[in-house]
Length: 219
Length: 219
Image (cartoon, rainbow over all chains, first blue to last red; front, side, top):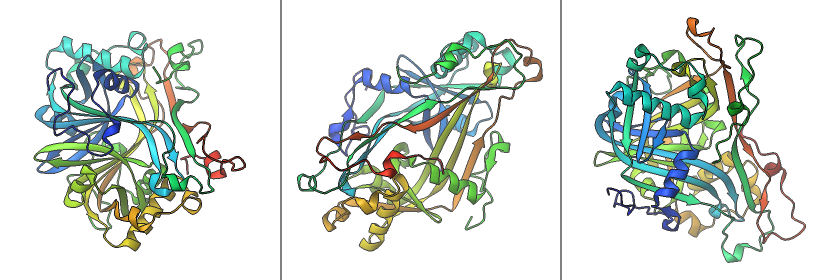
């Protein structure tokens, strides 16, 4: 697909094609709001789906973890992978059970992963990852040393073949069901940060940083 | 594995094995709190990971969707599948970037899916699914008719081979980092329901039901 956004037969959305989006701006907004992906890979025909965090820079996804991770060992070996990000926005309560749905935005990326070997590129990718999840944290925290860099695997997955799917808005019922006497509508769902819980060994006088106090995923 | 909860080589947790749980009660609590899974399957060696809702009854997961769904056509055909459920509980902000983590509970189920043919069993499974996502809704809404049942595929995935992984509690830093002058702790994340948005065609006098007003995933 290179930089074009036309779907391939593998990423063309079959069900509810009116919900399909192949636009890179939409894709990027979904990827930038989320930070948990589900990585799929197959070993001897058995698929595995493993949750992990990710970062994005331009047309590349970065995932990372321990060098001992079975998932990363597999995914960095050049086998086909699928990286899926799902944001759940609400429950759609229709009059008929059949027309119940959910509002969501999801992205499916098909590609292959490559482990980053160059320590400088690795460090850059780790900064991207950290800043993707908690913007502001990298500068304040104790940054990785050489030993930690060696113990970390970072995998890059170029975003070439992808699709996004978006369902938003209100209930769509069959015309004859609108008379059915039941409440219908959307129950929005949001990921909300609670009150930060200070680690007991943080000295008095160190306050909760603003980037934690005002944490939000909406961009 | 039958009803035993010992891990197989495929479900044994390699990384952070102290976080691994093979207990069915823990598994069931995670599955009952969540309602979105990521289903993995491979076609010609290419894995796909598709988000969908699910229900559980005893040792069986149910997923459903349109009979035209590519995912369900694949998954109901007896090929190996992986169903993963992830609940994100918080961001763990350590003093070192390296020790940053997340609190989460996740479940990985390996198995095979079978489409349910019997209409009565299908209806039972659809009720389970609906009640899993919005308890109380099935009784109030207009239940599926014969035509809708035919247009719906329901797939059962027996929960035989599985693992769960749980990370909870506070930051764990390396001893020498505790002196590093930065705030550290956990930022809890919760899925929270917002104010219900009534569909414009609901007649006056029909109130938001209690099961919508008080909606919560915590059990």
